Image 1: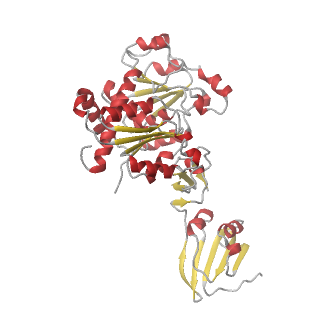
Image 2: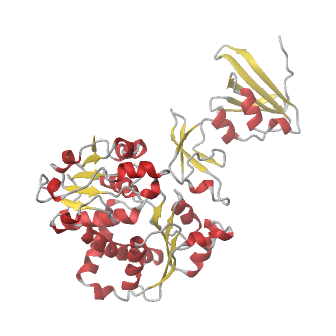
Image 3: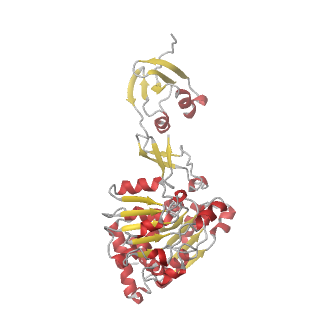
Length: 140
Length: 312
């Protein structure tokens, strides 16, 4: 049995779909984080069969929009003084700024350096977003 | 301060279109009453893509209202070549003019311009996406000839894939009841699924029928909307040449259509309507172009009046 110590202050990202953990780890920029981080993969789960978990110590700051895009059903446990003080499921963000690149080569955001992309959730079931500028749809 | 723009054909609800059309009809009835309504106002036309008639129509509209026009006919060779962003150009020009008309090859350019502009922006066409003042023109033409929007059967013919005038018009007409669309095109140039989805989202009861045969569409239509197969929308010339002459309207083909049907076309025409059709009273495309100027006059007054909460 693999053991990772409990954390007193920080965040535990639980119920990440097995196999997605590394991607979440990379996209949240945790490789270069200045605090202790643990990534656990293929952990047994009664609910999911297998799951990935990320434990981040000493910070309560996390990009929930990015997490929502990558793992909308994950559980975010905020831990303060060894106690879970808040538990949230990020869900798919309604608006995503700068994280999704528009695939339409004719879209203005592909050439306008001043403006980052803006996508709006149009179909939560299909995880589909629409570019607010050109209307191109993109699945996440 | 909220600035009113006209960026997409769905920006206006049917009532707002009706307001603009009523004003346009009053201008047609007594143009001299409006000859100085924009005196002291300046409109900038920024065209990053070649266009003759849209730009001329806007400029004629503003000049007939007594306003002035500053114009960059080929914006691509001016500020852009120096590396200026569209956002910066719009902010600068918005300091000179009271109104900006923008045509740009990139989709969504007008939406972006609207975010930066301190003055109303009118989308004069953004890539293959929207051309809302053509829709305004088309709707006004339908209103002048048909006096209604409900219960119409509208046949669209030609390039339905890249034809942005079709995309805009079909979505706006979908808001009316008992509307039926007959979509005549080669398989390569069918209406995109995205637009069909949007039409169904606007009005689930809107009937969409697709056919490759022009004759099928002519028999029951109240309106035949012809489009040009546009060379600039193709990546290679071979595809363009193959499809260019596929759907040509002739006097002979028109003989199966009803006497009340009208033939519309956003112009310019290349080969898709035979010149002999021009003499037919059902051919209204030159009236349509003329109505477009009056509709744009009304739009300019409408947007400038809104800006200051009173008459322009």
